[in-house]
Image 1 (cartoon, rainbow, N blue to C red):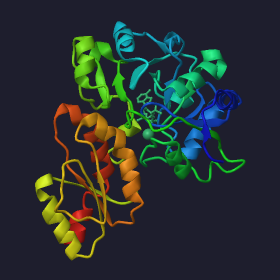
Image 2: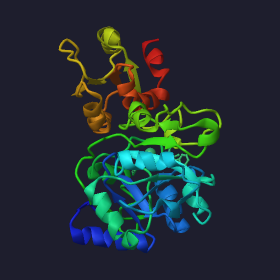
Image 3: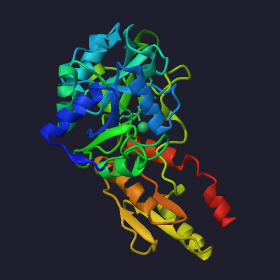
Image 4: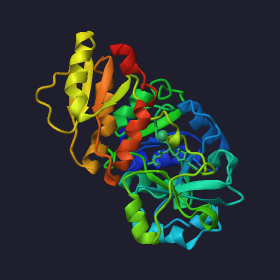
Length: 344
Ligand code: TXA
Ligand code: MG
């Protein structure tokens, strides 16, 4: 099965598929999600099966605009409503105390629930059609566990070749074009406000500074007791080809030394490097939003270049770049020793 254009009929069929317990991949403004009825534990279990993801990892519940979040969460603090008013619909996920009737499957057995209202028009139409807008769609990113998230329908097809065959786990893929934001939502934990204040679990397009301006207090970095998030594992978001971050000043030299070892290189840069020759090259915009938009598509393209390494020009370390730096650090984590081994 190929992805389908998001016509009203296709969206209505997708909503029915979700209601009958099937899985549907759909576009959001951040990345594509692999959705299931959040109140159907068997359907949620199929998400884990399709992704190859451990079942103790919680999934985000996506709700329609104007949804009653008190259905999903309890002890909702005023700060939640402040952030919702400022940033929903949009790329921000709130972690709140889970309402008692919400199935364990969604929260990976934790006493919290992650909720987000996406701004992508196709996601919103799907959420409005599903259970008359009163349901929740549990959806992690539509990729195999640990791999690069999809920002286009074609990426979802490439991730789930098996699962989209007739009789496979995924009923349909709605095509909504390329995701605008390009990296996953910012996640902020509001479930332990009294003791820890707001805590940033995953940086993203909505920055700490933007949230601080609304809350009057700056979300803290995660502490040891913070709720688990698989997007916060050291290794994640990784292509199959090893990814190496290299400072701009060292790129030339690194490329030369690797070529001397007959290595084939893919390069992702954001500043001009006319002198450097790599077998595949992707140039990304020099601003955080533009870079995030193209990041995953760029990594996937370079992953197909049949290179020995993907070299990524290291980015500025300031706060505006926190979201993309976080993703690149995790994409490169498993290959941190590869460069020394190749040059050694
Ligand atoms: O932008 C996004 O957030 C995308 C789109 C599809 O909405 N979804 C996404 O889902 O990135 P996923 O599952 O790939 O990443 C969600 C992260 C995981 O790291 C998960 O552990 C964390 O959110 N999470 C979900 N519910 C949580 C909870 N109750 N407590 C702590 N972390 C939670
Ligand atoms: Mg993910």
